[in-house]
Image (cartoon, rainbow over all chains, first blue to last red; front, side):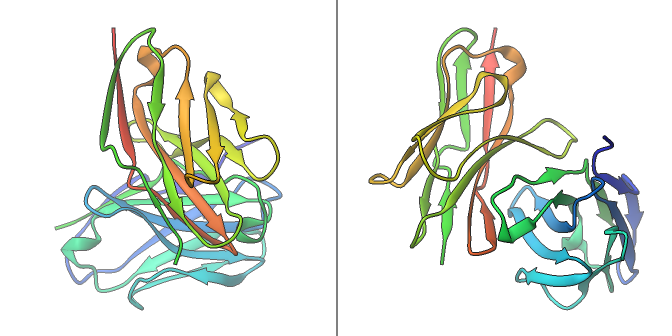
Length: 115
Length: 111
């Protein structure tokens, strides 16, 4: 069974640009969550999608957005990039997500560097 | 608001010795508790979870964790550490759809 796939793995952008990251969950998983990982702030929850609907949202500005498609694949977008957006962005999938008791399965992340 | 704390940024142990990585939580209600491990430049991997039942939970790679409701703790343990256990460990708590991660503890096992 294929794991969670995130693309691209590495990318470099400049301030003011926008970026779109993609996540393909494990087959059959309907929940996709996104996290931002930085050395200073640790792991911070961005949002969760379940069956194409945003179910939970963390405390991030509106520049951070996401969506989920009918095949459960998800994308997140960051507009007007700032230096502080440099981070490892992790996607995690699960069968029932936040409403269940199951564990999360993480992708290897997309490392974004903003210059 | 719920939160989870990992009081130690770094834990160093010698190979073959027992290891403990500490986690405490603050929630009202009955939380679900998890441990994850992260190797360099990788995503997090699930180790074990506590939902209900026996307070001692066994997980992957010989790890176990003890849920202590009175002390609101969920410490990760392993009887005999391996060099390959060196990694970043995260405790997480989820309640009513909100999963929070601790800041992480870097475990270093020296030969």
